[in-house]
Image (cartoon, rainbow, N blue to C red; front, side, top):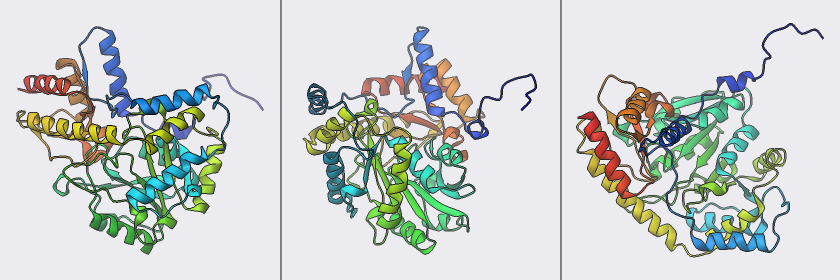
Length: 392
């Protein structure tokens, strides 16, 4: 084989098609500014600022001391799989067993699921706006992401009637995220029932990302589509420890899948990460089976922070925002001629506040900003004051 001189073709076409993460881009920029001596207040990433509860840390330390540092079976620690199944049945009503549970980082669970189920040319319906990683996962699997536009007037919910209009013979999957990133939307039980009916009527899979399931406010209840009649056989439910237990750096989550799909996803796990970190899984087991008071305390604090940031946004005339029902983000619309990336960079430069332009989450996010309030109240107060003064 003969090669001509010139640049070496390093990257695959699939990677070239994928956009970088808008949230990580702004997080890294905020870090650079801080290193330069700027006093940046960062609202960029969805990372709880709380410490991981001590009993979880101690369980992982104990596992290390006891030598639990070797390979596990790919699906994860048996006791942890049992605990996840028990939690999903008790809290969400999903009729699963430990054999349906795979332990893996939450983002990895999404990627593995899409890679195991989506063929070249398959269509996956995803919310618009939605988390920055969904569409790249679909693209890297060779599929096509089909955005279902959500609206502020409908509290950013995925409305079944709108989804129905997008279903074609190529549709393979509907991807849901409730509570949602970036909008904090929470699907109603009627929404979930309607989407379940669509999935059954059109023989579709559903990937339900429920990583914020415990962070809901105002007495609302989280509803899992996998608990609806006939849906366990076609739903992959994904959740995790990062948001609920302030365990972002632990990189641990789980998925629940019907047996045939579970087997395919497990193949991807075997040939990629093998299994999630062994000793960290003992900490995760303590998280699920230990005291839940730290979770309740964190959710209470998140609701107080939400109420504070909503109060402060009302003092910024160019901001308009509905009250989010869950997660820890607000997604205000702003007035002005700058696009959302320009506005985010402007506020980073002039207000020394880091946040993410809404278009990073899809076309419907243009003229919006995502602000994560997973930080302390002092930062929220100071950061919003800076924005108000800058935009005055």
